[in-house]
Length: 248
Image (cartoon, rainbow, N blue to C red):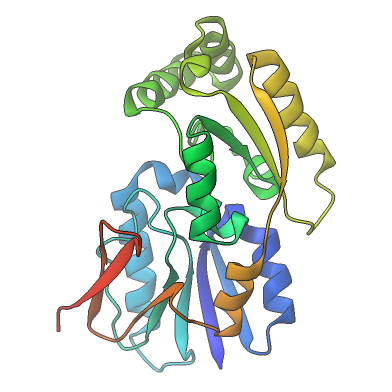
């Protein structure tokens, strides 16, 4: 098969590694991580690429998505002439951890977790983005932070949030996810430093490439949704996370 992967840049290193090892031809297109903060914009950009790739001729057998539901940014995406494949995942944390079950266990154990991953930290563009990778703060906290960034810059915004104790109200733990793809010691040290400064517990957790690997190898079992042409992705409100509905 020949596949094209539309993905968030926070998955860059794992995607490139798994693409290199895939038995299929895999092209990768990365989108900026900050687009998550505007789900409707991200959805429109992804749909535009799906539409363009389906306009023909069709060089790809499937479009695979390096995204989860991601704040419902992918809900509403519609497959056109080419099948679209997406993991059953709330967000990229599921992809880093390797399963919905492991994600659920960690969320139940400590929902107030600030997650760190190598590509996410390395690709910080200084435009604030989300406060944490994956499950995080309330919309009010996010709004306050973004206002501080606009007025005072990101470094000063971070300082103000710490002085005011805003982060401590929502988070108790910092977790660095070690994917084993590249040297992530600098990111691990940042996670440790942030945890110590903000009074959080710190954990280093092994990631798992299995979902990303299977996405790019075409091993699409019940952990993936395969949208056939004319099907639209929808949130399922159950353990399956996503479902599909034929619209044409």
